[in-house]
Length: 234
Image (cartoon, rainbow, N blue to C red):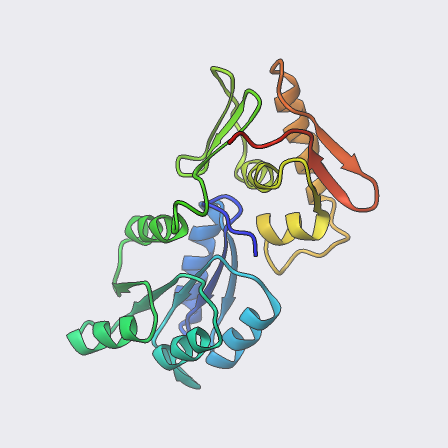
């Protein structure tokens, strides 16, 4: 299971208030996350069975069950994805209950969106020793926590999607990353394999990296995907 920081991070939002869920989904998408929104325990169960997520934002009060019970069941199946509980309940029992169920953090409604983003960034950085925040390949350097990219001393301005794709390529530098993995990691469930968004994004990345001497090239592996022709620095 790949894991990313911010750009390249796939989030499942489980929220039965569809209006609020859409606000959270759009806001996180604007921050560069790939986001899927579901409104029930059953849909959440199906989503985590079919897809691979890096973070889950979970409401406790769902129409077909309790979010804490679902979290406990997911943990019992061995799923270690970080879970942030988002709920209108603010009693001590609920906080303790949610955390005891296997949640990693807790935020009560109403909440400030910047705080939600900060909490998710913190969860995405765990565990730091298994997932380095700064990736390097030759003179190319990417800081996943600040979403900045340099070639040598020069900053390379990237769009959120370009950053997400580059991060995925860097984390597997020297290996082929399939179009399906790039699509899943940088976009969301609404895109399909026939879309040309990956090609457009790769073309933009190449143009920007080619402006800087020594940047590792992105190679097309026809019919499979793309490869960053470099090794990640130790």
